[in-house]
Image (cartoon, rainbow, N blue to C red; front, side, top):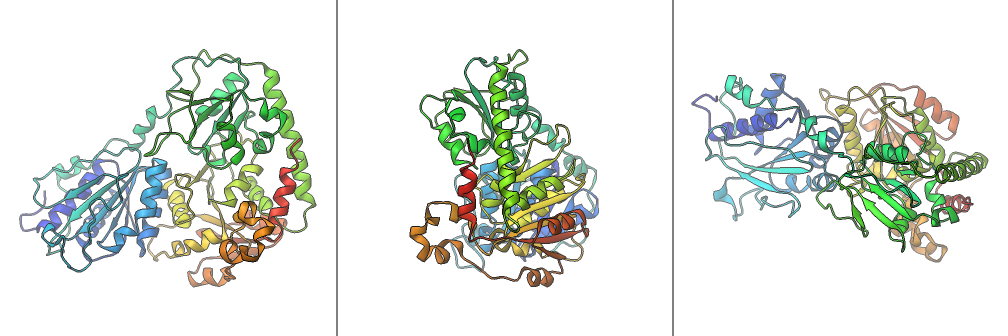
Length: 544
């Protein structure tokens, strides 16, 4: 219990921290500010007592994405900010958490209610600032002890905490027995126990079926594909890209005669990477069975014929004709051989070479965070089915597929999974520059062993493969879409004392990946962009 002479702001801040701990929060990221000082002091004291781990960042956007990454791979995290524009800078990470269904607590300090609607410094309307997708609790000082209780679901929670002066505590906070009991929450991972229920009945094995596993689908789609003998089209961040049924070149096969013979698709997770998959899900005559999706919008963007309670197979699931899977496996191997031959004949280092090298370097128990745009699609075409049970974990911000905050998210993901034998991030140069201040860490901050591989083609190559990259738009493409930046990444890394390697060949890259320095390091892989559209056209032409 707080001492009687403590002020209202201190009592409120300590009640918030006790509630966070009681909800299972074990990681708190603080961005500095004056109005959130009571919260910062309370978090410090809780960290000193060994009840949580404290992180600080000077930029609220980076702080929020760090908390997002921590929540993805470990215990739920909270981010604490001051008032005003600081709150708005949390919004991108909050939206990603909402659409990806990642538990995240956002704690924003605010001025007292009497100053709302006035021109008081750093005062704006913070209640509901994140829109209708995120519930806000407006927290004041006029509540009895123990009034605040939290239960973390999939997605973000916003606590807007109104704090009045004085903002500093009279002394350090030593939690008493009642506060420690209230701060002891159940294992936050227990909430995952019912994420993947089985289907309520076996699925008819007759129709020619494929299983599509999108982001965060988990192991059940693999189990279903194995039980039924169906091909598995699994994105790298699905958690299903393991075993003998996972196909490497599936997106090149979907628009072949084999792909056109599909009669049914079972969907789990959040598929976002492939236009051929999108077209398959909207194709006339194809039945779609879909498991529940995580995130604030559960509705699918395609018509669903049958809603499944889960993607895990029923114990009595029967297998289909083995010839169906065999045809897909044979076609996948043939196209993969031609793909490897094509890439092997290319002069210099290609983005696909980089993705393939990172995939091969990822050991069992390893972690890989992948950026949006080209890198995750390149990886999708280069990953064979990893060994089942090796516990490789691939994560990505696919809720809204943004390029913002990826460096900070990767650092958080690596910190949240301390058991990882090795951690990598694979990002493009524009993505890296968008969050370069994620490399700004204070001398006392927890730092993971993380190798950030930056595929640098001096611009946004993803657009060269889309409609605006056609030759008809060449006169304006560079300025509007490619946006070359000519940034010297070595100098940028030197400014933050981040070790940097620059490589231009596959052997150099493989050596760099095999020789980590420890801590955060950047491996810059220089590739061409001027030939990217032509290269991808040759790859698409490989399909039989």
